[in-house]
Amino acid sequence: MGYKSFRSPILEGYIGFKLGNYNYWVFTEKDNAISFAVAAYDDEGNLIETWERPGSRYISQIEIIKETESIRFIDRDGPHTEVHWEEFLIR
Image 1 (cartoon, helix red, strand yellow):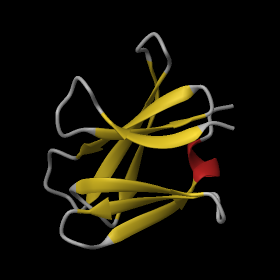
Image 2 (spheres, one colour):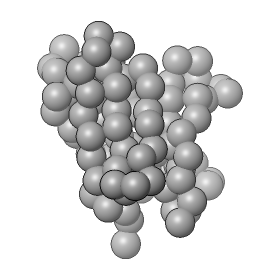
Image 3 (cartoon, rainbow, N blue to C red):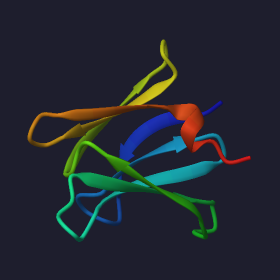
């Protein structure tokens, strides 16, 4: 399974990761909630699925943790949200 985190070469300030065959981008919610959205896109740029995750707001870094098969979303203000990557797998 492919996985890595990266910064967008096109959308400055956006970060994402690749999991399997899809690219995932992280977005801040517009309603000032303490949450963020993750959107999965295929290689043609089609939106495939979205998820909302509570607990963090302004994601500044993503860590892929192979040992626990999880993704850590780190808020610029310190807190983080950790999610098992299986939650983002598209079947």
